Length: 273
Image 1 (cartoon, rainbow, N blue to C red):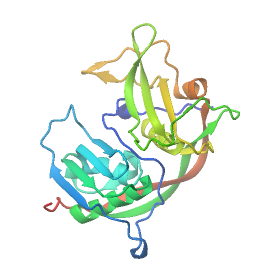
Image 2: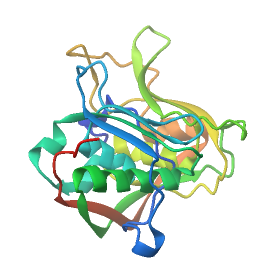
Image 3: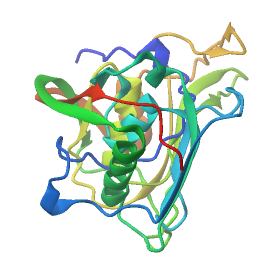
């Protein structure tokens, strides 16, 4: 099986993101207008990056979003559940200007609803207009190894859904592997997280409907940088195709499938709160 090449730019992902599953590649129609946040503050970020670069997560209870130092491009990856490479168009400042957002509602929402509400917020405050395209491409299907996934079920009553966190994971010899740490995550969200690391989209075909805790250590093709210097990878690190079945009882299989793309046709600097 051909190894998927890990993108060096994604080896040390600085942002924390929170999405659970893909949405249909279309905007809501007038008859299905999503709910809006009751209160939303959008301000240019005054912090420095690093240390806070693109922190985006739902608030506990799924009543809104807390955002620190995020670019519009990063916000689009969350709102529309796409990777950076699936976005084109838009002004240059979309990739550099950073914003802090506090968006709240009085009641909890599903993750799908939160995505749609974030889309609506971007439309209202940034005059965002996008066009959706779908392209048939080679993708990777995430499946279970002979029905034997090695995952820890999470308490279904826990309504906190923290982002999957990329990190450096220490090896037994004092060096490092790349790592992903997830708590209370769906398999569709995990597949999306893998899409951010690999050079192709990953789709969930595990058939596992629950939420899980997981830890994954792997070796990227290109060693990540830490404080400007390449990190020495541990001999314990294994490539993604080996790490997934060995540690989680999951595997990646090459297949064909539709991949959604997002074209930004209009975007303006935000209106006042």
